Length: 211
Image 1: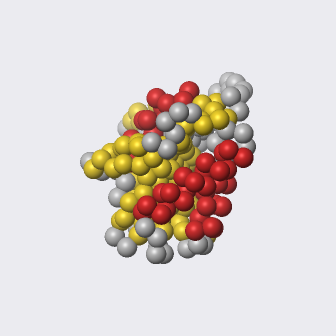
Image 2 (image 1 turned 135 degrees about the horizontal axis):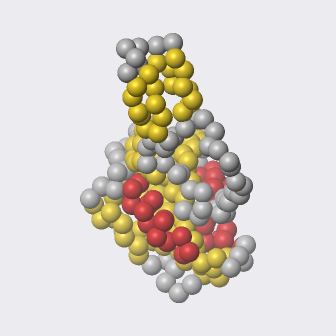
Image 3 (image 1 turned 180 degrees about the vertical axis):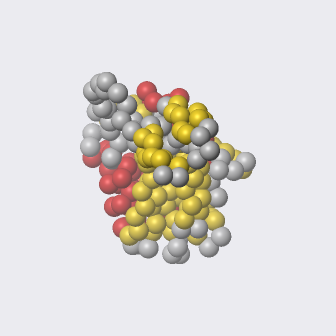
């Protein structure tokens, strides 16, 4: 089980790469269709539009996307920024929830149902990450392996962090693990230093709401 956990973590942790899109649009395309009685209206998020009610009244409306979404499943829940995407996999008895941004910030939450302690989960993940990144030419910086602290739903928890330079990017990875009922939860937070401000916003939203 632990071997499978590490293999899965390595694959996901190396998926961090900035994503960019280019192009111009003359007009925002309609994303939704709203039907009121028999009338249909093309609607784009963030754009004001008017509808006519069955009584003949004209009403102005604005459809907005939520800035914060919630994930709930597999015995856990948390809030996350709408700019991020969530995916779930299960392998070797470990549920892995990946919350990925369009730039470098990424959060991986793993739920271990087998007999493994938080310390074992944390240490195995740290060792595996260190070996994997080192094999790819990472230069580990002074302080790697020392204590990192974060608030998880009002409780300060201690973990460890790795900091290294790889591909010209200075990267920080924090790893935490603790028991949640009959489950051990391990959490990895990863980001480039250049995205530190955005990452802290994303990470805090998840960690302070995590249940």
